[in-house]
Image (cartoon, rainbow, N blue to C red; front, side):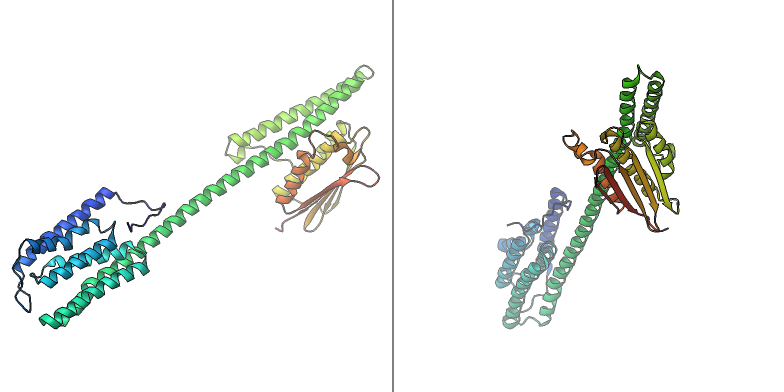
Length: 399
């Protein structure tokens, strides 16, 4: 079974390139093994057997399997050690083919997890050490050979394990980088979605308000055009003005979508524009009063805009659903750490929503969302004795 590590995040090397490199290593080790056997004069003990075909075959068995050292590191190491044991048992002249085991040990260390590589490499090292001990006992080989075996085979295994750890660290860094990139993309997508929701809410609040004013004024003008042409004309002029304001707001919001230059956008409305909003409501036929208490001060942009939109949407709902002869009262309280808003009307209240096509209404949902994003809260519901009440409290961050 293949012992290659597979990871979907790892970019694998070109297998053909790896095969060519390993083939060159294996063939080079075979050539070195044959050449070193022919010139080696360091054998101790009995005279070595004369090289023959099987001697070269055993050298090939210790070197040529290295072609598959990456794909089958355990099997390659096992086979190379097995052939080495046969080669030393027959007592052919020593050769550099022994270093094929060292390369196979490195492959085990670099390709297998640490515990498994230590187990496989330790078994192979023990086998070679035991065979070396046998050679010391039977052929009077020097004890120094044991140290040589540990060094020649143990160091490549340790180097391979360090290579494995380094690759794992690289993979971990790559995973973290990919994860961070995905998180950045996710945050960017979430920001885009939040901006779309914000723009949709702005368009709803602005357009719904102005169209409601246009509808009410146009309906009023139609009813009185014959009896009071002057008032009908005034109502139509108010409807026309509301239409212009709606178009202006729509163009401004679409401009936000088309430009990334913040200086190109018109300023957003805020609490300073409440007097103008009250005048619009009075012109639209909704008598509205405004009462402000506390120390009036500049508000953060988010609080300023959203507080204005909550009041605007509340008045729009009153204008749409409050019924005839309804009046509205706005109370604003600037508290030390928050802004308290209350809008009361004496219209039909919650009953107006029963059977309404847009129940529960995007406006009420929008008001709650606007307060929620500022860690505030909105409470809506019918008033005792009739009418409807919207109360909001929005924290004001300290400077």
